[in-house]
Amino acid sequence: MKKIIFINRKEVRGPWGGENSFMGALCGYLKKKYKISTDMKSNFDLALINALTLVTPEDIKKIYDKGIPIIHRKTNFIASGSEKIRKKINGIVVGDKIQIDFSRYIKHSIFQSNFSYKFFQSEGFDSNYDIINNGADEAIFNLYLQNFLFRKKRKFWSPSDKFKLLIVSWSSNQMKGFEEYNSIDKSYNLENTEIKFVGNLPASIEFKRIISLEPQPKKKLARIYKDSHALLFLGKYETCSNTITEAINCGLPIIYEDSGSNSEVVKNCGIPYSGFLKKDLEFIKNNYSNLIENCEKRDLKISSVGPKYEKIIERYLF
Image 1 (cartoon, one colour):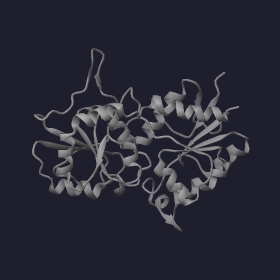
Image 2 (image 1 turned 120 degrees about the vertical axis):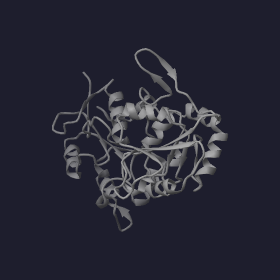
Image 3 (image 1 turned 90 degrees about the vertical axis):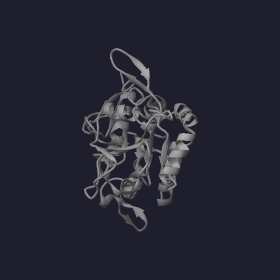
Image 4 (image 1 turned 135 degrees about the vertical axis):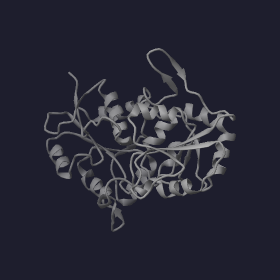
């Protein structure tokens, strides 16, 4: 009989952020071996808790009191969630402190990046942990265009093509780089270049030059990735950007804000943003073939990430 794992998520169809996309992919992988429950009142053998989604510290304590092992996937809230949960008190982010405080009930913590672990450690975390980067669902986010009739590799940029630069952000939080995107929109005049934004804009921003689209479901978003040539990602203090993992899986070199875990996740699949977009795009174009090759080799797939979670789960199931 399959062991039952409780995961604190509510399945949301349609566009609802990278975190939802990753947890959906992880659940899909784990269902091969375990039965997944999202009902906290049900009977289960182990709890895999994601951040603070749909749970309170009291809920964690109740699970602990039943003798059920808990694995906790931590998220830094300095750039996520409501203003209240992002606030710092005595130098510690409120959302992070909540997670640290209930860590005494946790068998094992999973950090999405070394940056995230170091950040939590500086705030007082000291317990069992592993670091596992996120992975994208490669059945959707990959290098191929396909339908019922054919499957062929996506087309990459060549010097005769218009260069298509993509920006993606489900969140309208200003920490996601919108001040710089707005500045780029007001000033850029790049020959044979198109910039497209997909996601939610802050109410105070309306792009004039950058093409703006509403958030897209996963499959439509994947098609947009595969029609683009690079990703501009200027989010700050990211725990582990799912946008970056999805883009790399689709063959997009990254121009990234050198903040949080961005450089750790991108590695040799892109370059830090210099503040001069024209200069950075020239580098991407001049090194395009090498960058694409690096993207193809970078393993940020759920089929590689899932077994790492499974290994930790097996350690505590009894």
